Length: 484
Image 1 (spheres, one colour):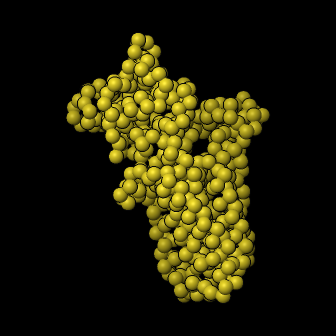
Image 2: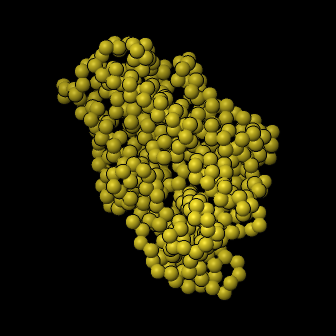
Image 3: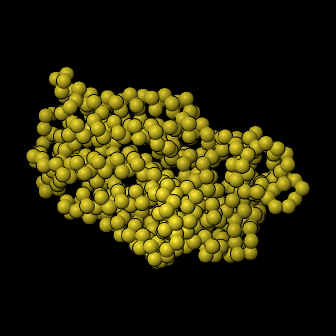
């Protein structure tokens, strides 16, 4: 047991006062200017229709299914206030804990409006880990001559950066596992990556690099292999201390490469690596294994590792965890064969149990397997709802990633429910999930879409080999369904 305790306390140098101040300040600046950020929760929730909001399990356990933007604005301001106090080392570790709690609340509220998004999970983990760190140097506490913890305790050890290393290594490793599970062997031929690069080309920050990669299948194949190898090797940084800085350098290269040619910008995650690199390179004196709180911290660390392992095995996307599944499909959209109509029930049941490959998730529009269509009064070709709202510049609707997540989950739940009832896929019934969603969306369209009277009805359609299968339909004149 003492070896385990010693590893957790002394595997890395403690967070110094200067590092604490620089890290907290830089992270605050990034979370203020970056988007989507938990500190912008009031704006994000204010632009999301409740019909498409999906509160995470922790929020539901708190008895909340929606938080009003003014409340979020107050929480954000209070969080920033204690964040600044934590940065200057005032009332450690209480202000660090309060900073984490405020940020975590905003983060969990945001999660119900962002779809699959892990751009600030690293900040959440970093703030959690800093709850276990107290640095007397460069602090207001020292100037005022008081401390809330003993001069030498687990709080002054290297536990915080080592715990963060576990979390961030897990995040990288989860991304690699998702590519292997979701993309399969096809991921390694580079065609899936090349497809995503082609879709991202119009918004590439370095167009030359984008053209170079999309024009070379061999380069895409090499990048596909490199990305998985970098991600799957991440846990080595935990076990082999000399590899930590070189592996973190590779992680930064991966993020910079994504920054150049795709939409995501992992500035926050790269900043969090500062809290790993500096302690990894700093000589430090050992904290005794019998220091106050040492055993408790070691138990927390072990339980954290076990929790991450369980989440990995379950491929859990439930907040605050992520399996990092984004952009992990192995086939270009043009090569994906839609399911047969008679396969929908089986695939939906498998997806409902967590086998996501059974019902493909869409990371770009071209991959969508289900959508809500708006049919015009005079007949003819309908329009996908999201694009119709986007074209009409509707200010309050939903982000595309959340829209796709909700529509996919609803389609799966609907097919599963009808299969259990031995009902037809197009069976009418207000109690089925797809019908409930369409009825909730109807008043949104009537309220926000200019000229909505030109359209007759909404349909939730699933792609199959024999064309679109309508699993739910509702008239735009249908009565409003309130969302709780």
